[in-house]
Image (tube, rainbow, N blue to C red):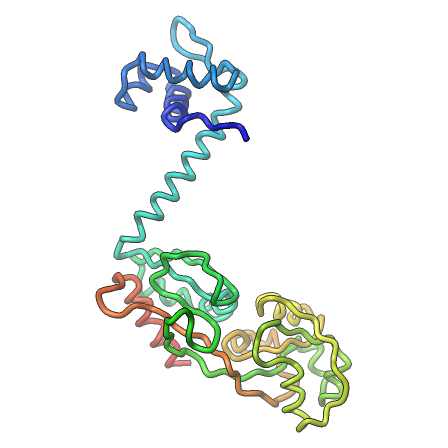
Length: 293
């Protein structure tokens, strides 16, 4: 692997290329003109490319220098943005939220405007995952996870008590009057959940269902419900992810039987002084919203 130039060389190059002057770059970087010039020379030697033409009235970028500049500037912009996010984690107005992907899309998304209107100063940094063991961020002040309530000795506050039931597009629902009709269509589900089409069918038919249905599986309800919305088949769902889609008429419950869900969505958040003002505001808002559901 090609060794990258030292960061101070890259900074000298970027400042010199913007100003087309070693003197102006030196002033910006609080260095001497000769130090900047020497760093650029060292960088050119290391890369084996001339980056500047030294003219009497200033500098001129070579084709190599002109082509390299956007890459260097983009790298610095990424570093600056990442540093700002890191420093912002200590900001009382920054909310670092880690949420289950389906919860974020189907429950939080339709209600997020209300939170933003009530707390306009809060800056939201949202990371999503599908299963609790995934950790897209280590710095989340508030987490909303899906499971049975305990993860790595952390105890969550239960937010939901849902039921499992079939959903499909309206044009498909008119074709389904009973489980025999249901089994004529494609079935969609998730791997890893405690209740599946097998358990729902056993409950709906009092154990009289025969045969094992073919089930297409997706890793998240965001995908399986999209398949259902497209009219491709029938998905297993629950209130938290499906209610808004049902109320809007985009999805329909073709059969009314529902199985109490063993898993739930849980809130994990530190109490008291261990969390910032933005996290406290979101936690209070979330719990109020869940009560009103």
